Length: 408
Image (cartoon, rainbow, N blue to C red; front, side, top):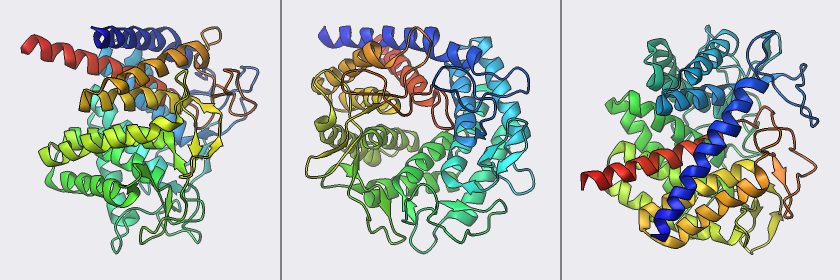
């Protein structure tokens, strides 16, 4: 009974947060109704920064968010917003000559930085495949497939496996291939984490032997080369041959990856991988427990010796902790994981969600006060993807549990 009460509490929290706080903020306050699209940033006083460039990451995630919202809830207003985000993206970000998406455009829609960041291309595949899943719009699927094939052709390290980080606009190798996500290394956990997310999403709507093979290969990369199987944490930065260059533990990425790998195995449908991913999800969730404060919030980063490098609480980490711990509970039936998920949700409601001005604070301190950086509600990276997805996951998981009970 206690578990049912926590799940119902999570569900009520998720629906309220999604429909009354997160999505209305992006649908009403962030749209640029004069030039189109969405403002690239908000100032700390809550007003749009009309001069800020518009980043690929934010705009792809907006397509994904409103597409998912429509697919799940069938609200026509979400469909309108999905199309609004999709049309702007394809008009201004999509590189029709070379395939793929520019990193950023100016407020007037002209290209700003035209390099091909693989992390960003992953979110483009993620967005386009979900848009197709929600709408059945064939050109979106066609472009997602074309971009996936381009990554396999150009970005794949055929000697060592895995994917490099960044290319020029025409997909030539950059002089500095360590640019961006990898911090001096040639490969990063973060890029591969979101590639597995993108490939899993595309596999749902484009299930070919090659797509299934490549998605399975990415699963094995994440579980055998990026994951430290002893500690239950990812290696953040790696060289071409997968030698780690940093031992920092990023708890938000760990807990996020724990459920994304499980999701990937489920979509692939291999019973052996599903079982393995359940065990890894539980191991990783348990390893992340050390970063959860007594009142529910999850800290950012630490080192294997137990020292925390950053004791601020960042918005996306809190959202991923809710889902990751919930997933670990479903995989193991260990109630301690559900309790952490529920406590984290209540922490978000108490401290992270801004129910006065909308959305979530980007960062708060241990006392629940907004921090001195990442306070802005909108940046190239601050978006509704993590927190809206948290709400979607809670809702869909509870519905699936209810359907399973009815069918038993």
